[in-house]
Length: 415
Ligand code: ASP
Ligand code: MG
Image (cartoon, rainbow, N blue to C red; front, side):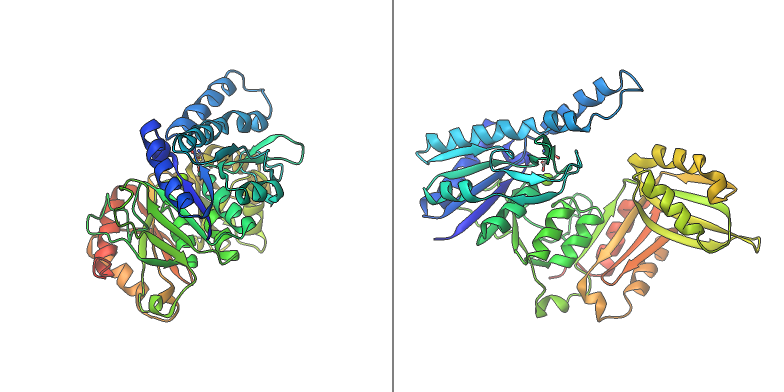
């Protein structure tokens, strides 16, 4: 007997037929004698619909003040619905099941509404219920704040609910069911020859997720990695008896190192800001980053270059597109303190990254990458690297061309 956490995303519970199918997948594990905890997302599109309500009301007046605590109350409700529906579907199959809301477990978080972090999970009652043979269907994405309010874990957060629960329960397996059959070398909609990977290392998955691959919430991968909990990503869109190997996200193995690059990711949600003729003196980049941090804007890529004048420099950095307005007004308010001449914005950019733990021990990756882009006449605005990743910022119109070029330059179509 094993203890299993199964997580189903929004498309997997999109309607009653999908929920019935999910109940069959869950029932099979329960009937095999396993202890099963299930984490569900809201029906696909539901969270966006709820966010829309909040945004519409919030737009009524500009001087409304904070609303994030009520935002959480509203947007977390989609998961309440699917947890109850799946529990009923399971009971109709003769499986003992009950739903659990975040506050009932309780899954405790900090007070950062809309992007709360998990502080702890009280497993006593939940554990007992599993031991009594009752499948626990948990509403993902939500928890309870120190003030006793509903909190949510950020968009895509039910992946993190599932991994955290698996860690807390000491689960043997954490299976994340989605609408793709695993993690691919690139987005198959852009690269038809993209391949499903059998395994991928935590570090690679973490880079791919944070560079734009949307299969798993970045924080869930971080949590799995820190706790050495392997996760399997697989599809819920196959018949119960069909083969469904998925992709195992796990610690790196020798065989993985032979692969230099594992995947290509892209993100279209960044904007590039250039500050021109900054005073070239110690502390200036720190001031810019400080202003961004105070405005709650996270800075991704940064390059500083010299300008034509000796005493000044140019600073180019990228931020999330949705933070653009916030960032620009913060820069404007602090113009004198930072000391720059003018600011340029480009939001028609995208970031394309190649990721692979093999980069640690192989040379020539940068050369292959930049040559492939140069051959297609793709101009690079900004470059950023880590030990296992190289990212470039390019014209958004070139995204697809670049992803395909890199996929074939690293021969990712060949196993
Ligand atoms: N329903 C939430 C969202 O759409 C959480 C999740 O699906 O993981 O972001
Ligand atoms: Mg998701």
